[in-house]
Structure formats: structure tokens, C-alpha cells
Image (cartoon, rainbow, N blue to C red; front, side):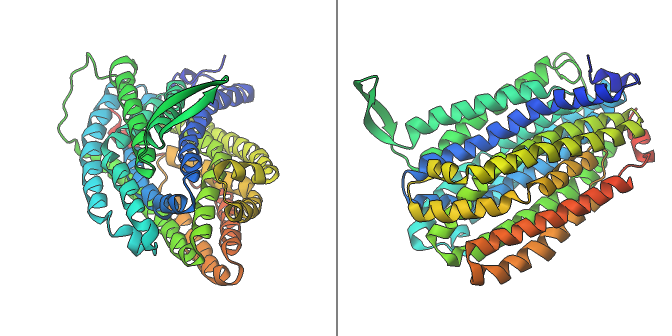
Length: 473
């Protein structure tokens, strides 16, 4: 039976072994990604019952939230990639040293980002072009989320570390738990107390009636519980990297931090730029009205269910190529790159077809507002055509990050979204409305996927690293 230890031990692996291991790691990662986006779907669907203004209030700041989350998540990759390399080289003590540096750095960095986000929370909806009827609600929703950034960042770090050692299963299980907790908390926090008929019996359901604030609080509570459990497993139970029973210095280590900065900086800047572009798209959409803002936000959430399997496979690819690279098995890393990208394209092509066929149904689950449902279903069908090439970009990106190749992929993402999507969206939106914005997105994703496929096949993303041999001791 295929096992990740085959990479570390230098054992030969047939194509069948490689496929089996890829599937073994991908399935839990896909489940984790789907459960994560399911939380956003649940929030959006529940809040959608409160009306168009509440839906638009979330939509207005959702891309900004992704900006702050993503910056913190990208920062943790500088440490998780190093752990994958060290585990591949069978250097467990070195991996623990990286973990200690990662914990301290993550808490300091995320606290600073959280404070900055809170300071701009009141002005942000106004900057984004929101009307007076939604700005106050947007501020409350945004502020609650960003206050929990340190715990969310620890969730990113712990999950990334567990994936790096190959334990994607527990990450998937805990993310499913997070989605379940989100449903439970939202059920009681969003809506007021009400009577529900269950099996013919009228039962009073207690509720806090907090609306948007309840949605944010429910998700934050679910994330805090999950982060605590994830850290417990990482620090106390995961034998390859646990800190319990192992002493070591928490003082800054120049080699570890410099390599983390080298890996994370392009990723962090890239994510900031990409999310900045998403914010720009929000600004382009805002003048189209509340219906367009809400339809755009719901559409992004629904589409996420389609492309999150790609991100799950991309995470598995990062682990497989990272450990192969750390073990100096460069040809194996290339083969895992090709296998995971092909798998991602296959899965997301199927998901794109499902999204196209079920666009009306999925939007009906999100909102009762007919105008939002109509335009939303139309833009989803436009985006379905881009899913195969979007998959190639997502998974190839994970492949390249796994070996520490972050600068060129970051530039590729930056150039694609700012030189293709934003200009086209600005041109198409006044002419075709929200459909024009999504046509621009579809074109850009096809361009991006093509560029990533070219770099993958070229092989320029993987080179023996002198720096790696110096830092793994």
C-alpha cells in the first residue's frame, strides 16, 4: 500500500503507487477545503434569508477579509514548506525547530495585521463604495472576523504543518467538525427565538437574533475550537514533529527565518496584490447596485464549491513535491507535479459541469430574491467554462510552492489578474453589467492556466538547491 514514507526512505515507486498516494493525500485535503467553503456557503445562505441588504453587506467586505486572511496564511507557508523539506530529509529535530519559529512568528505577525484591520474597519465599507444602508453592518461583520485573526492564523499554521508531514486526514476531519460547529452556532446566533414545527410538534427554538454579527461570531467560535484541537494534535500527538517531550530553543534562527522570508514574501505580496485586485473588482461592481453586489458575492461563494477540490489537490501536491524535493528525489517531484495537475483538471472539469447544470438550484438555496437568483445563475454558467484551466493554475501553483519556487509563480498570478482581468472588467462592466465582470474573470483564468501549464512542462520550477542542503542539518 502506497505510503508517504516511501518518499523519505528512497524506495522505488511505480506509477500506480504514485497515483494511489496522490489520491490518498488529496481526498482528505479536498474534504477540508470543501468544508471550509461550506462554512461561507452556510453563512451566506442563512444571512440571505435576512434580505438583500444584509447579503450585500457581507459581499462588500468579503474580498477584504480574504485579503487579511490570505496574508496571514501565506506567511505560514514559509515555515510549512521548510518542514516538508526537512521531513523528506528525515530531519525531525530540524522540523521541530522550524515549528517553534513558525508559532512565534505567526502570532506576532497576525496580531499586527489584526490591529491594522480593526483600525480601518469603520472606513473600509465607505472606501469600497457601499451605501449608507449597508456600511454599518459591513463594519460589524468585518471587525468581528479580524479580531480572531491570531487564532485563525494558528489554524493555518497547524493545518499546514500536519499536511507537511503527510497527516492530511486529521486536518480534513477537524475542518468538517468546524463546518458542523458553524452550522450549530449560526442556527442559534443569527436568528431570534422562534417556534418551529418538528415532527408535528411546535417547539420554541432559542436564538440571539444577532443577524450578521451572529454569522461572524458563529464562524469565529467554530474556528477557535478547531484551531485549539489542531494545535493539540500538532504539539502533543504528531510523533514526527510534536513539541511535547522535546526541548529546544525558541530564539530566532537566522537560517530558518531568512528562508521563511524568502518563501513567504512573494506569496504574501502576491496574495495582497490578488486580493487587492478582488477589492478592485468589488469597486467596479458596487456602482451596479445592491442586487449586483449580492449576486457577485453569492456567485463567488457558490463557485468556491467548484474550485476548492483543486485547492485540496494543490495542498496534497505541495506535500508530495516538498517531501520529494527534501529527499533530493527531483524526478519523483516532477512526476507528482504532472499527476496532481492532471487530477485537478479532471476533477474541476466535472465540478464545472455540475455547476453549469445546477446554477439555478444552488442560487435558489442562497436567496429568495428573484433578481439576485437570475443574474447569479447567468454568471455561474459563464464561469463554468474556465474551471479546467483554473485547475491547472491552482494545482501547478501548489506543485511549485512545494519545492520553494514562489517568486515566478507570484509574478505570473500578479500579471494575469492585473493585466487581464481588471482592465477587461473595467471595460465590460459598464456595457454588460455583472456578466461582463465574470466574462473578464473567465478569460483571465484561462490565460493564467495556460501560463502555469507552460511553466510546469518546461521544468524550470525545480532545481537542486544549495541553500536547502545548508539549512537541513
